[in-house]
Image 1: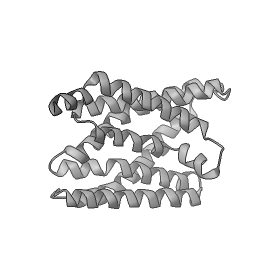
Image 2: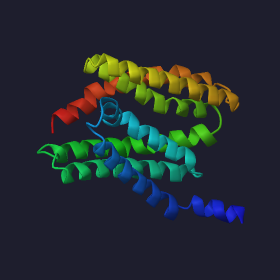
Image 3: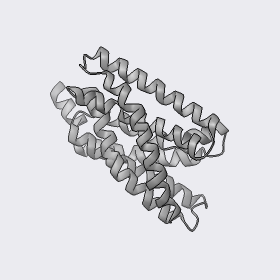
Image 4: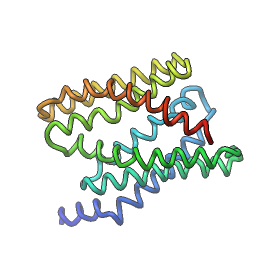
Amino acid sequence: MASVTAFRRDAPVTVLPAATAFGLLLGWATYAVHGTTPLLDRATNSISTWIIWTALAGALIGGRRLAVGAGALMMLATCGGYYTASALGGTFGSGGLGGAAVWSLAGLAGGPLLGWAGWTVRRGRGDLRAVAGAVTPMVVLGEGLWLGLGLAYWKDAAVFLSAGALLTALLTVFLARAGTHRYWLCAVLAPAGGLLFYLAEKGILNGLLGSV
């Protein structure tokens, strides 16, 4: 009975619609709370909010391929939920379609990586587990660098950098306690990846958004 229950819980017919529905809800929720308070406005107007939930979803799924597919679907659905809510709220604007396309492409590229990272941190083996552990905090750190260096929002940047550092520390400790041999790779790669993410956001993503 236990094996049958586990199979149904991890079946594509269950997992993929659930990931899609949660993504739609997450996208709508992040739009709905914009402007309510400064804290919630910054927390929801953020890449980090979406990526943390996508990585967590990957960690909850039993199959690696299913986690990768669910990550892609969830990020696409989150973009869809956000921009649908924006259109219904009358704030879509003339550049909304281009922005939605850019973020959807970014989600299609990043969603599978995040789903894989969440799955690998929880269920993977070897050094790759520590590498996967660096994926989520590097985005948080990279966004903190962008807020500070790119936009000069230093108070917000300090919050994101602190959150990224804390997340890196927690994941490193988790990997160490789980017996990952080179668990320290997470602590080394997360800040290095954060810098690369900042440079990519500055040079590629920001350029794409500015052209639509």
